[in-house]
Each structure stands twice: as structure tokens, then as C-alpha cells.
Length: 148
Image (tube, rainbow, N blue to C red; front, side, top):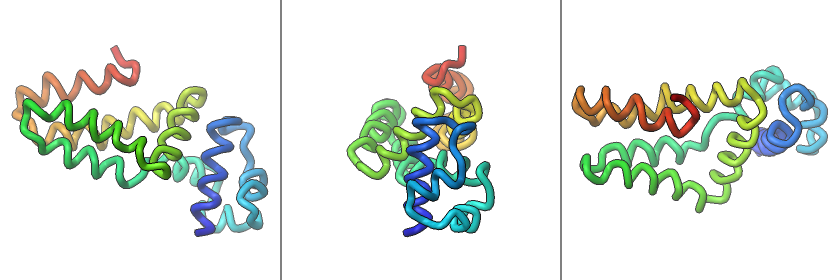
């Protein structure tokens, strides 16, 4: 409960003010907790930042379920799963924060790219033939996030 309050405050601060301006004390103040609790739960500002950028569990659950859809329906299933996350208010708040933070923090953008490269792509690629894996899994989703 306390850790969730701290994370919510951190997400709001990182997305509005950026990493450099956010302090552990300002997050503690916004979460209405003692500053020592921020360090207790997250060890450091970097640890808090990484935790704040972690996608909700429902994110990868949706990707994994969509990835096992029959090939002709897989793309639609993945897009539907991603859009469906926005119907869950808690997941939407986390995703919004991640996207806003990534819009002005290079390390957050890299974290988002890493999420797709190391979690989403492997989940989707696992269910493809080697030819499909090479052609589709490595190119299309990367283009969504600004890669050529």
C-alpha cells in the first residue's frame, strides 16, 4: 500500500517534471510518507525510476495471450490487447506515465524500447515460424517506436 502510493507519486513527478527535477523528498511529500520510506522501498532514485517505468502485469499478460492467436488474427489480437489496457484505469495511469516520461527522458525512452525488444518481441516471435519471426517480429513493432 505504501509502496504503491510512493510509485503513484513518483510516476506523476517523473512524467511532469522529469528525472533531473524529481527528488526523493518531493516524491515522499506527494505520497505523504516519510522520505526514509522511499529509500527503504526503492533504495535509490534510480531504483524508484526503474520501478515507476515498469509496465503493469496486465501488459505482458495481454501480449502473451494475443501472441498465441492464429497467425491471420494475431496482429488484430495484439492491437486489441494493447488498446484494452486503456480500459483498466490503474494500467492506463501507469502506461500514461511511462509514455509521458519517455517523451522527454532519454533513459525512459530507452527503457520503453528495451521493454519491446526484450519482452514483447520475444513473446510474439516465439509463436512464429523462423521466416515470419525474422520478417515480422523484428521490424513492425520497432517502427511504432521510431526506429527506421
